[in-house]
Image 1 (cartoon, rainbow, N blue to C red):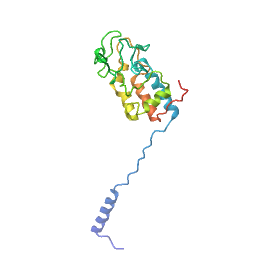
Image 2 (image 1 turned 120 degrees about the horizontal axis):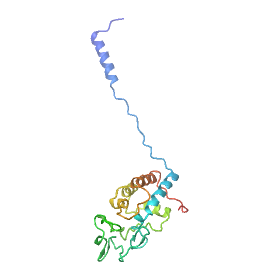
Image 3 (image 1 turned 90 degrees about the horizontal axis):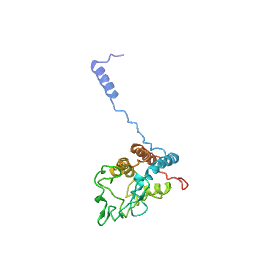
Image 4 (image 1 turned 120 degrees about the vertical axis):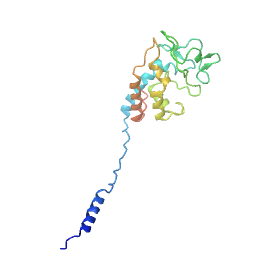
Length: 202
């Protein structure tokens, strides 16, 4: 057997090194969407529902055209009504009393730059809604301001007017969950399938 020349040996080594550095085929990574879970989704929504039906949320989502007040959700004094834009009518505008921030003191007027009810063409009523009715309403883009599920999560978890419910000023009861816990439940409801509770749920 003839001895290999130095040049041939070098060529073989270079070829071997080159082959060892060839890029390996990339393994495909498959994305698996969260499994739908009707029981878990409904359970999460029921926690969300309790928050939305608390006075801090429901008072600005009344069945009628007048906002509600107090932990007992009585009709707002001063004959305040929704108006077309949700900010009141004529001289009784929400901003007359509700400033950009809460007024200091017990039961003084709460405040936020966006203070008001939902507009007349998108009333988003909470008061009197069953869990099923409210879930379906929240998911309906014709009733929720045109929001997708992702936008609905963002609105409920991050909107500063929604966040006022957890900073309502002196003398007002907070919702039954912290805002962080509320946001978790909203995400769980949507991620597990955005199921609406049965008509019998309370």
